[in-house]
Amino acid sequence: MNTKKLFSYETFVHALSGAAGGVTAMTVFFPLDTIRSRLQVEESREAKNTILAMQELIEQEGISSLYRGLQPVLTSLCCSNFVYFYAFHGLRSLVETNNTGKNAIRDLTVAAVSGVLNVVLTTPLWVANTRLKMQGAKLSSEDKKCLGGHPIYAGTIDAITKIAAKEGWQSLWSGMVPSLMLVINPAIQFTVYEALKAEYCKMFGSKKVGTLSVFLIGALAKSISTVLTYPLQIVQSKLRYGTEHLKKLTVMQIFAYIIRTNGVKGLYKGLEPKLLQTTLTAAFMFLCYEKIVAFVFYLMGIYHPICPTRK
Image (cartoon, rainbow, N blue to C red; front, side, top):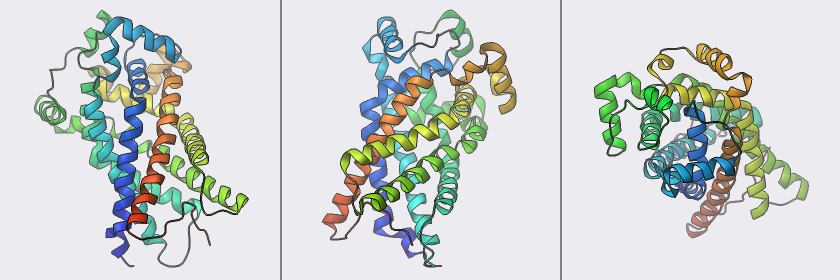
């Protein structure tokens, strides 16, 4: 097995482009992620349509509340996307060395393995990120009683240090079980994205996918993966920033708790802003990623067709 491709410039370019694309997209659509987080975590906040929820939050806490925690989110996302894109493209280049070409099952497997590596390495960043995003929020008395006992954090590193000191190092990986289960989300997303690109190129006999088509393909791929895995994301949020009681429950017990207190609809609380945010963010991320990759390879004098080739 030739491992040179794993440490090649091409793999590094894909990772760097994925990180840059993700940061750009998240910056643009961050307010939607804020609304999604608040709806998932706060028991007393009613699920409303995105616009109404955004207006309510601005009235209660000011427009700056929509961007609370942006810096740690971008830091976490940059690291996470770099790890994921590097692992995905690096590992895929390894399994293609035997002239076996690409296929959906192989892409799904590689994407899942990349997701596991990403979760194990970056979960502490996302745990700190969730705490920082909720910091300073004007919680209701009910939510404050459950969620307001955390100290003030100065930043990502400070949050990680304080969480480890007060709650133990294991708490930095809280929510990792549903996170590991959620590797199927980007796995489905990337597999569908690559498959749709291949079908587009086959249908139109082209080696390049147009800008609008890349955006739409990315949006559709993310929509499918989000709807299928959203209940697990609810559980993940509860484990990362829920009450001490919830943190001690298993994944299935939290599922039962949510259904018991909010009904089945509780498993999809905040889906609208999440779907809107994640779909637009992923579509814009893929668009930025493809353009950055093509531009960098052009500067390096390397031909890079956007369409994947399949044997």
